[in-house]
Image (cartoon, rainbow, N blue to C red; front, side, top):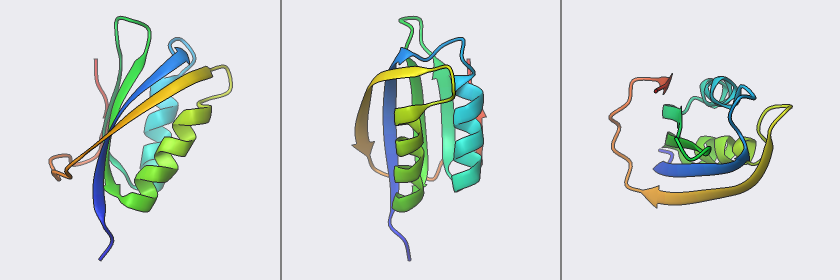
Length: 93
């Protein structure tokens, strides 16, 4: 059985207005990760990723690059206990 993990992420840089949320959802769906992503008022993007450790790590690696027109300057990851509360990956507002 693969280890399940939860990562709470804040991504900084040019990450709003560049389809970051939509592409994050696409990456999460590709890797089979559940959770959500949203823009914050301070210009960052916040996300929760839950799933097996390898898939969450792949999602985090994707966030370090982001979509074509983004410029990620920092990614802050906090690891929490897996909860299994999500049924998919959503863009929230």
